Image 1 (cartoon, rainbow, N blue to C red):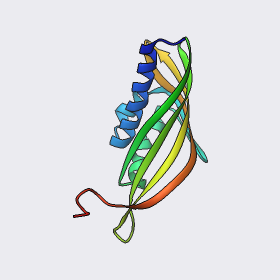
Image 2 (cartoon, rainbow, N blue to C red):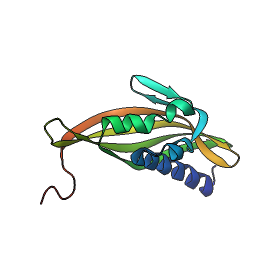
Image 3 (cartoon, rainbow, N blue to C red):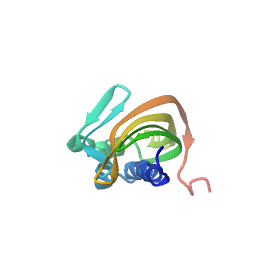
Length: 145
């Protein structure tokens, strides 16, 4: 059975990944991934630090802002390796051509593989399973007044 520190370390890793994506912080994002990590999305995958470092720019080109909210996480830990499922709602704010905004929520179950290298837990693989998408009107705070 995993100890509480291992579980806390993996949960912190998951939070840092989400924060890095939302802040478009390439260095932070890469610090959560092994050099040969792979992120698998519906219809595509990105592998290795050089390619994965482009994720923030991809997000920036598609969305005005994002916010990844992490919910429950199940883990199976075996020594320096672990697998898990992480529930997340990723909110994507988009500025439309007419100047209005919409938010596109992806309800995701990440299928994660982790490895501990030199006492640091990292993602080895993340696969996004998108269960459903919700799109609705949105506005920046202050625009409603």
